[in-house]
Image 1 (cartoon, rainbow, N blue to C red):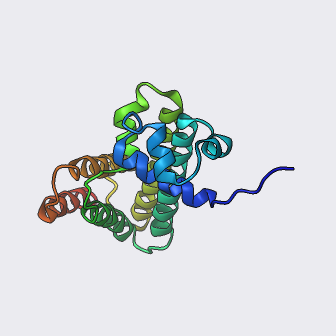
Image 2: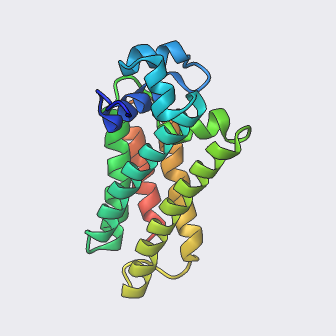
Length: 193
C-alpha cells in the first residue's frame, strides 16, 4: 500500500522555485534542496525525480503563474495601451520590491542554461511565445480600435515590448532606481502613439 505524503507538493514546489531562483541551477546542490524543502531526499526523488526534473517543474510552475497573471491583465483591461502599461508597471514593481535583486527566474534560467539544455530552452520558448501572443493580442486590439497606430507591424511592436521587459528584468539585478525603470516604461509606451 502506498504511503501518503506528509507534505503539500505545491508548497514544496514553491520553495524549490525560491531556492533555484536565488542560487541558480548550478549553484543549488541536492543538499540545499533537501534542507530548503524540508523533505527527505527519498521523498524528493520519489515525488519530483532528480534535481533536473525538479528544476523543470519549478520553471513550469513559475511560467504558469506568471502567464496567468499576464493574461488576466490583458483580458480584463479595456484599453490596450493601459493593459500594456499595467504589464510594464507590474514588471517594475515586482522587480523593485525584490530586496534580494534576483531578477526574473525565467530570464536567469535562459542566461544560465537555455543554450545547453533543450528542456529548459523549451520551457523558455513556451513562456516567450505565451508572452508574445498576449502582447500581440493587446496591440492588435488597440490597432483595430485606433488606439494604437498602424505604422508598425503589430508583431514587431510586441517583440519590442517583450525586449523592453526582458531588459528591465536583467537591469533589476544591478539597480533599484525607479526613475530608470519609469524612463523605460515611458519610452516603450511612446512607440504605440
